[in-house]
Length: 324
Ligand SMILES: [Ca+2]
Ligand SMILES: [Ca+2]
Image 1 (cartoon, protein in one colour):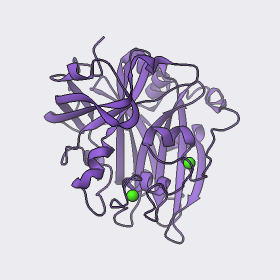
Image 2 (cartoon, helix red, strand yellow):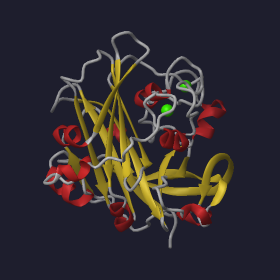
Image 3 (cartoon, protein in one colour):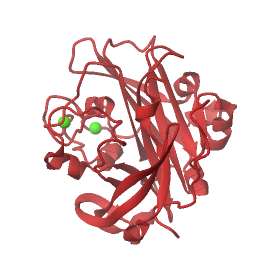
């Protein structure tokens, strides 16, 4: 088992037609297009959200936010608004930037499925003219995409208030089977929001999932470094993977009934620093230059975190998607 990196990724695609292979994605990811009713079998009751901020408790654990406080860092913006607008809900010195259409993507585990959670900030409070799409990069070289129609027909949709009067936050919660991540070893999810269906992409986000033993973990920007004073004031949002290299951490996404993270070191996370070694279209190939289990996060660290140094992996660069 080689953790948490799949070393044999190839980059052979250009950013040509990522938004077309809707049916193929449905087959591959189990967002079954032919049988959408299969996806309607939501966990019942819906996952608990004790502070009613639109970020369910299981997701708050993954993000490190306070499940009992809608605005964890007390900067005036709810955890959901910060997720949607690309600032950190953990540090008050990070607040949302410009008033503009924006999307944030995260993931969590559920009763049986994984869930992709798309949080969209609507400055005008109107979803009608906005295009929201999701998709996946498989094996570092194949894009598959979900249209807005698929997203809308399969996701649970909820609206929440934002700070600005008239603005709205909308959450799309899309379940998908963990078996695809397990079978492929890893995949990168991406989500985009457009000013109109088929129009320019206003904002994009991406998250990489890896299968580590029986655990599926999400790679996300290292919030510890973000909070250490490296970023002041508002951030530029979610697409900072090329510029600032803050390192990343791997957070398990527990699915009910699995205890796979038991052999991971508790109270630690695998923190990696990477450098970009190849760019092709909207894909970035990163080489891990340092990796170690570090204290300070309510997470888990896989036993061979450190051995990932030298490995490479390929993911989606959301900054390249914007404007396309
Ligand atoms: Ca919550
Ligand atoms: Ca904040």
